[in-house]
Image (cartoon, rainbow, N blue to C red; front, side):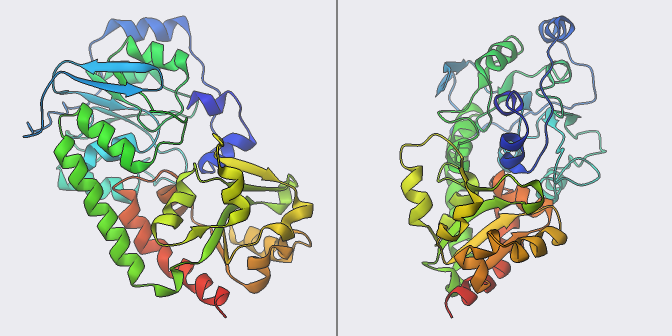
Amino acid sequence: MSSDVNQPSRRTLLRTGAGLGAAALSAVVLAACATGPAGGTASTSAPAQSSSASFPVTIKHVYGETTIKAQPQRVATVAWVNDDVAIALGVVPVGVPKVEWGGNDKGSTPWKDAALEKLGASFGTAKAPAMYSEADGINFTELAKTNPDVILAAYSGLSKDDYQKLSKIAPVVAYPELAWGTPWETATTMIGKALGKETEANELVKNVEQQIKDKAAAHPAIAGKSFIYGNLEPAKGDGVNVYTANDNRPRFLSSIGMTLAPVVADKSKGSKEFFLPWSAEKANELASDVFVTWVPDAKTTDAIKKDPLLGQIPAIKKGAFVAFEDKTVTLATSAASPLSLPWALDTTLDQIAAAAEKAGK
């Protein structure tokens, strides 16, 4: 997460709402990275051999190529999404990051807990992954203790420095192009290839895409509605931020049949940014059928509606406004994964459909 934590505050907060501290790497950490064998309580990943497994495999990413010589047996992950994908493919990682924002009292999520339980590896049991905090950036020391033979970061914002340091521990699957911009489908197929489960990964993507299609179809009011997904917090006084097509939140809304509003879509073309700052004085120009945001609490939702500038956003004026007040709901779509998306469908579609119905009146 260093790309963001080196530019903290607003940008980092926008990522998922999480406030993450700056990464601190010391010589002691580097020494730990180089020394190898595991401490901790992690079990081996031991993925079942797949019919699609054929090694070595070489995976291209933003920092070049990584060759994995044999099917990984001890998988560690950084950032969000990557652990979910491994677990969804039936692989229990030896190490995963604690969910610092939007998680439960175990530092996990409902969807991760359910999937690990099916694999007999619930947190608190002998087969559970070791968990390390990333509140201060990538936890090189604790990750190294899990003694991984591959590190998954297909969805991440690894800096080149992070990548090089992690590569001293094990081969690293970095993100392909945009920091924090890897679609969940791409992360799934990259990780599937790295784990020797390419066929299973492709099937997993198809399965989740079909679930999205089927559940969205049960809410016909959503289809074809334009949307803007932004971040509005009037108390902070720093205007409006709207997410571009590079971000997973708009991607989620597009996947359920909505359309990114032209005012944002046009500015997304050619951009590598995941959000755009927008003057609150021009909030009335943010035209769309539905406006979606995440907020820290219900008090903020009310403040947005009453705000003299933000309240002029056309969809908000019309009542076609969705404010996700639950952090876990926000996380499910901002860190979209094959595990989180089915959960997100069950927890968000009714609210989105209600707003879409108001837009249609």
